[in-house]
Every structure is written in C-alpha cells, then in structure tokens.
Image 1 (cartoon, protein in one colour):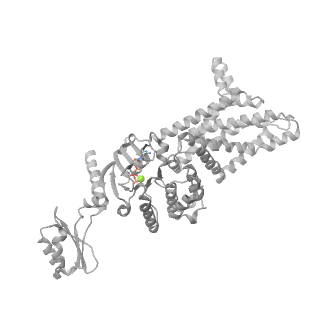
Image 2 (cartoon, rainbow over the protein chains, first blue to last red):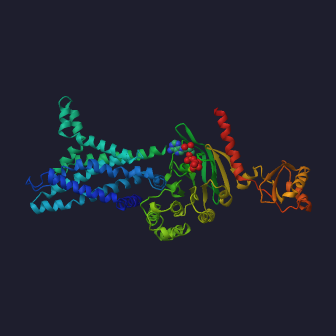
Image 3 (tube, rainbow over the protein chains, first blue to last red):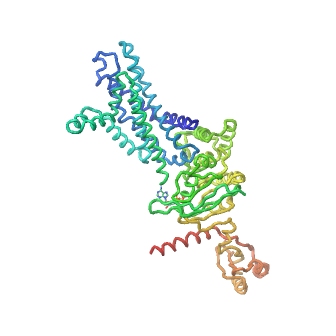
Length: 244
Length: 323
Ligand SMILES: Nc1ncnc2c1ncn2[C@@H]1O[C@H](COP(=O)(O)OP(=O)(O)OP(=O)(O)O)[C@@H](O)[C@H]1O
Ligand SMILES: [Mg+2]
C-alpha cells in the first residue's frame, strides 16, 4: 500500500514536471467552457443547472483522456525505464494501481479546476447542487473508465500514437453505442435484448443517468467494474509481455 | 560459502531465436562474476531473467533462497540492478529519482539520508543532483543508474556494463567501488573490457550464442591461452640472429615469433612446448652477455586471445554446420 502511494506520488508529480499537464489543463478548461457557452447555449437556456456543461464531457474525454492514458506504459517501454520499474520489489497490482490512480487524480484536478462555472450558476440562480455533484461524480467515473481502457492498451505497445488511436477508438465505440443514431439503427431489426445490451454498455447511458441528479448503484457499479476489469487486463498484459 | 545466486538451466527463446540456452551457475558471497561474450551472446537477456524482468522459457533463478518466479518481490528486494543502458526517468532530477528509489525500496527513514549520501558520493553525482536526468551526459546517466543500484545496500548486485561510457577516472572509481562493495555481496557484472575482468572479477564466464563456453578464474582462463608461460625477450636488433640460433637449439621452445619494438630493438616471443618450463630453460640464454638481452618476461596469457578462441571457434563451427 505504501509503495502504491510512492508510485502515485512519483507519477502524479511527473505530470507537472513537463508542459504536458499545463497544455492538458488549459485545453480541457478552454474547450469545456467554449462548448458550454457557445454550443451548449448556457445563457440562452435560462436554466440554473450544468447540464449544458456536462453533456460535452464524454466527447471531450474521447480525445483528451487517451492523451493521458497513452503514456502510462508506452512511455516506460519506449524509454526502457520499464525494466527498472518492473525489477523494483513491488507487486504488479501495486504498479498498475499506482499509475492508474495518479492519472485519475490528474483528471480529477482538471475537473476541479472547472469550479468557476459552478460558482457562476450559483451566482446566476439557485441550481440543484446535488445534481451538480452527481454530475461531477459521473464525469469523474467516466474519465476513470476511459483511463483504465487506455492504461491497458498502452501496456500493449511501445508506440504512444498507437495507444492513443486505439484507446480513442474503443472509447468511441463505448460512447456512441448509447447514442440515438446507433440505437435506432439496431432497434429496427435486432431483437430488443440486443439493443438493450448495447445501450447498457454505453458510457452515455450511465453518464446521463448520473447527470439527472440520482446516483444509481447500477451506474457506479458499471464504471467500477469497467475500471476493475481493464486494470486486471492491464496487469495481465504487462505479465504476458515479460514472457517476451 | 553460501550460494546467493543460483541459476539452473536458464533458457530464453524469442520466437526462433534462442538467446539463452541452458545456462547454470552459482555466485557466492564475496564473489564477482564477470559475464563476457560477443554482442548478442545473451548476457543482458540472462540478467533480465535473473532480475525478474523477463520470464525464462525454462529453468530457474534463486536469489538468497527466493525463487524469482515464485517469490518475485522477495527476490527483487535483495537485488540492486543496473539495466543495460542505465534507464532512468528523464524528467526527474537525480535527487528526486534517488529519493523515489529509496522510498519504493523501503529504505528505513533512519538510514535514508545516509544511504543516499553514500550513493551520491561514491558515484560523484553531487554537482548534478538538481539537474534533470535527460540533460545529463551519458557517463553521468550511467552513474545515476549505478547510484540507484547500490542505494539500498543490496545483497546481490547485477550490473550490465557498469563502466560503459565512463571516463578513465570514473572507470577506475567504479571498479574500486565494485571491489569494495563486493566483499559483502554476490556480484555479477557484464563487460566488454577484458582488463576489467582482471581488475575486479574473481571469476569469469564467457558465453557465446546463449551457452557458457568457458568458466574459471581470470588466471585459469588466461592459462588456456597460447601465450601462457611464453617468454618475451627484448634485445638490440643486431643481436637478433644470434638469439634465434640459440632458441632453435633449446628443446623447450616450440616456436618463435617476432613482435614489434622500438627502433634499434627487437622483440621476440618464444612459445613453450606442452609441459615445458620455458623460463628455467631460457635463464641461461637470457644471462648470456652475447645476446645483450635488455628485458625478459614471462607472459601470463592473454584473455582477449582466449575470448576469440572460445567464441570465434563456435561461430565458425556453427556457420559450417549451417552451410
Ligand atoms: N525482446 C527481444 N526480442 C527478440 N530478440 C531479442 C530480444 N531481446 C534480445 N533478443 C535477442 O537475444 C540475443 C541476445 O541478446 P542480449 O541483449 O542478451 O545480448 P548481449 O549479450 O547482452 O549483447 P551485447 O553485448 O550487445 O549487450 C540477441 O540475438 C538479441 O537479438
Ligand atoms: Mg547486453
């Protein structure tokens, strides 16, 4: 446990040792704001809530989270530091978890830095702050889900570009499977259970549910098990790679 | 003496490539094992398996009684490892990096500062402690890797080409450091510098194409050389013919070869017949004023020659087999 924390600290401070963290934070904040205010018609809607803010997160994450995840293992492999890292006296689980948690905490920092928008709605009206909180929780869980997928994929390759593209593609599939276009396409001919299954595996379905202000254990469980599953796969991939 | 590193039947295949082919050996406390072999012989691959970075295709490695496959964390805790190329996190400073290693290796906080100081002093990193590792020169990067490997005072040291890229002063320092630390540890180093073997290794293993082709103390390996117990004489060039005639008359001499020497001087090496004590026989010739011998010395044998002999022969043999 202590060693997970040590890895966490090194990885987390590593983000801020390079310009990457700042580029990421600025891009995230600028895009989040621009999408909310211009495309989301934040003011025109005349509603004191953050629906027009959260609705863009899945799409923002689609290209921003893979950018964080891609370096988790690929970079170590490329730089050769993985040989140092994996010959330290730590369990594989601790290594996988420490890296993941650091990246997840970093996305948490990005999310936390959007607090001015929360102040804005509270200043403009009387929003349902409970719904905003669950919205943030949903967004954070979604980021964790995509990160776990990305961490696992980044362990398979030396190339950060490949890791990025594959993660974005997988996350895209998981996201759009809940969109109206895809569901309509299937509902025309596919049996209902299949359409329902596709819908229930979608990030959007679970994310939107949390956006409505209710934390359903189903949605938390969905993201929790997604993260657990992909981190487990991550550990297996690292172990298989040792076999050369 | 206890065996601290026990390697049994280690094999590693990468697809069709057999990088390591049934290697076994032991390293005891106080021993420094030198790993020699041509490029691609499998030295680094063997080290990667011993340190648990690669899973062997077959065989086992035990570190202080802990099997690397069955109890990886316990085994790894006892190893200090400098991987080939000395990788380190480029955007960290040596100070932050060593602090991270000390934490993750759970160096007790009472010892932490002292251990880091020791490693920093012995690898002379003091002046670059707060400079990002990516901006360090190659030699300094290697020293950071070395400092990281000795930081936790491990029982087993595994160093892949520890002096590669170091300047002559540092090479000397690092060899002295290894020799000093090695008294209490079991050490394995790989190197392409044969004089290093003489300087620090108590035993050398020459591997070629994944197999052990020679194993012994540096002395024993040198004794396998044609040059072992050969006698070299240096004399004025004008006296050369006289000496040749004298050597030809000596029963212990198998052959004579000319070497190069300074202007006016000639160098001649006499090789002994099997079992002959050449220096005793040549004593009288050496003292004979007619030859005006300036210098006479017994050769110890040449490691580089043995190296070529045991690694080169295999290559041409297998080339013939393949043809
Ligand atoms: N990951 C890998 N995939 C495929 N082949 C590999 C891999 N790693 C090593 N090899 C092969 O294994 C053989 C042994 O390599 P190794 O790095 O152990 O050699 P070495 O003795 O350390 O050589 P050098 O003196 O150049 O460092 C080489 O033929 C190399 O090409
Ligand atoms: Mg090597």
